[in-house]
Each structure stands twice: as structure tokens, then as C-alpha cells.
Amino acid sequence: MILGCSAAASTAAMAIAPYFPLRAWSGILVLAMVSTGMLATEVDFSHPMFRWAGRAAIGVLLVSFLISYNAAVRDVVRTYHEDQERNAYILSEKAKGNMDITIPAIKGETKYSVFVSAGDLEYDPAHWHNAQIADYFGVDLIRRAPEEETTGQS
Image 1: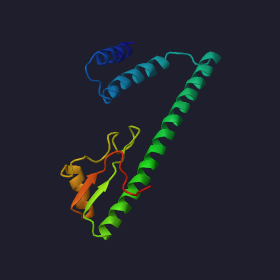
Image 2: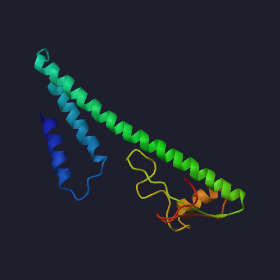
Image 3: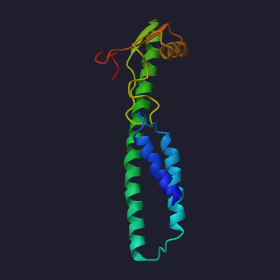
Image 4: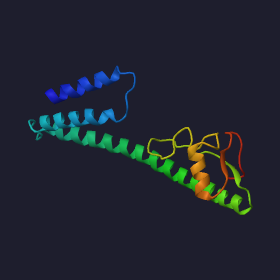
């Protein structure tokens, strides 16, 4: 009971905080799971109502997981293909002798993507991330293309 109250108090405290970092949920969820587990050891689950409720809860969680998993996989696959196309474009431009290359940023759509929602490149070619990509490919500059501009990629 005390752990459950602690989980509720932690959630309330974070709700009024100016910033609620995602990692703060880990402690709250641990408290909630431990208190739920302790409570579950005291309940007789032989009643048909509990079996039905348990199966329903598992079904809802499974559907929720599948929806989240599908979105994550689609985003990761999309960004992977965009990254491969962009890498091929950089190498083809380098082969043509172009050492100042403008490419679009890759933007992730879910929290599971390694690409942030603002894009992986900055507009300043001297930014450390752009410079690291340029150094990796052995070119002078990597620039981020404006949002409406295309570089000939599909």
C-alpha cells in the first residue's frame, strides 16, 4: 500500500514540475509494479471475473504494443532507406569531384528513431555533426538543404 501511494505521489509531484523527463517514469513504474505485484499475491485469482479481466488487460496491452511496434519499425525502416540513399548521393557527388555537398536532413517520427524530429543536420556547415559527416565521407563541407529544396534524390 505504501509503495502504491509512493507511486501516486511521485506522479503527482512530477505532474506539477516544470519539466517531466521521460526517464522519471522508470522509478514511478517500478514502484507501481512492485506494489501491484505485492497486492496480486494477496488476491485469489480463481474467480472467473479475474481471469476475464486479466485476459482483457493482456489483450489491450498487446494491441497497444503492436501499434507502437509497427510505428517504430516503419520509422526505422524509412530512415534507414533515406540514410542509404543519402550516403549513395554523397559518394556519387564526391566521385564527380564535388566536395561541397548539400543534402536533406533525415527526420525521425517516433522516439525510437536515432534521427531526431528536427533532423540530423544543422544549417551551419561548420556545426560539429555536419563536420563529422563531411570528415567521414572525405569531403570539405556537408550542408543541410532547405526544407523545400531537393538534391535530385527520390
